[in-house]
Length: 172
Image (tube, rainbow, N blue to C red; front, side, top):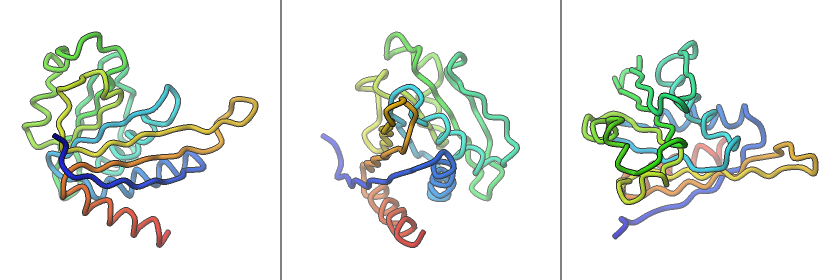
């Protein structure tokens, strides 16, 4: 059974808006957080993950997509002293492969986990987490116009943090 949840919807018109949102979200992250990034290819999942990682580790941090390695580990240089795990599960063939990647270690070590393509691990996904679903609206030439972002926070702590994000959004 899922814990209580809260939803928040945002529109991000440009890639820079996505980067700004990632920076704002990074300020709310803490040890043990799990962020599930969902959306089609090219929707902006990696852009969002990269902006969160750079906000926590420094703007000069090299953040390659973990599409081929499936996982990358970073260490924040902020006062929170966070390990940030970035998983890209696009090429995962069976859910149990996540254990070979050390995902369970990431969850129990108190790091932050950014997980692209989380549906690939099915029932192994923890219940207390933040789901971020990015949907792209395209113009008639197929070029992205804007991104609609739906955030669903599961658990009391995420509900409180989504309230904080709502306030940031209202004052931006």
